[in-house]
Length: 401
Ligand code: ATP
Ligand code: MG
Image 1: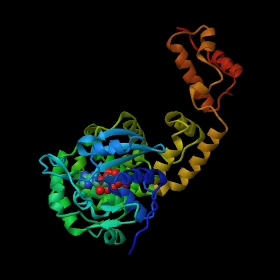
Image 2: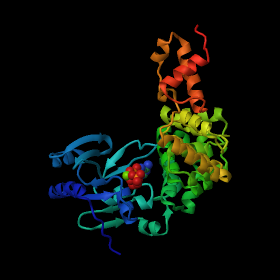
Image 3: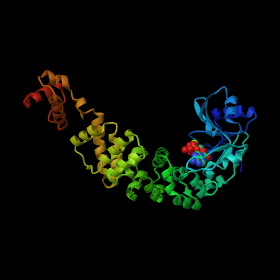
Image 4: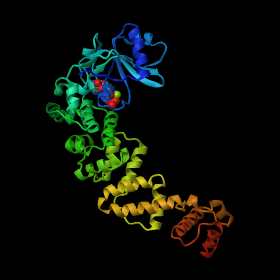
């Protein structure tokens, strides 16, 4: 069956320029796969018979960045899109389970396609409409199958990142992993130790964002190996019910994991501080009672911030499914507090530190008084107006230091 793929204009331009100089050029990899799946590709990769020097020369009119010259890759800017263009190459022997010891530029696309990881990632398509599918990737795509190009055991031993990539494609595309490929995954699990934490984290994030709990459950032992902890099926199943959010997803995965171990995982994966803080925030919600009085809602907003509080409730209503209705009630109260701009934090009090200073207070008393007032406003013991607040301080005869 013939294949017709609409190449975007900014991709066509580069292809036309390379072809007009007599070079072959094909769109390859994920973009072709996504087009066949009728999905919008994130990025386009091209593959050409031109050597890097020839590419740079043929594409003089573009901004080019030698992103991976050693491997024959340059990034070309076309209409504000960056496209990776790589010389046809084959990979030499691998000795570190990750990078080929050497690469060799080769003459034909077929040679290049052999180095690619999975059959569904090894298509090539050019402007003439030639579609190359050496490994029956089309059939695998139709049958929703992830299958290594070549002998799985060998391919995972060459580059162990492919193990977690296989899981990622299975999760994101919701495909099954073919049995020999699957067997080799399990047999080579220990090689994941050779893969950098950064690369593992990138793939893990994509897996979590896919929301595909079934794949994580199916390959739980591999994830447990990577993370060095025992995972619980109920926690994993939360991932598919939560909104697609990386921090929420990680918090679900680590829901039952001991906090000390979670801290170790963060370090091991070299997770950034912002994500760690967010994941910890979701984990801190554990044990939160579902029915909140209005004043408790205000404290909840104060603690988690108006911007995050709805996400917290999303998390809680999945974590405590049986009290989902109560959470939705709480959500309504919280949103009406936010909408009415009711005071939930010291900054929103109609009085500031200077006002209190002017009343003769100083040092730590100022902060303490502000918190005292906030508490009174939240409990609706006093109205949030400057005059009332000043009277309230006077009434309570707070001693000066
Ligand atoms: P995505 O949708 O995430 O961009 P992709 O398939 O395009 O998926 P990339 O990481 O962008 O993945 O890689 C582009 C192509 O390069 C792949 O489709 C595959 O053909 C090849 N490739 C990438 N990483 C490897 C690897 N570790 N081993 C073999 N081939 C790889
Ligand atoms: Mg890609």
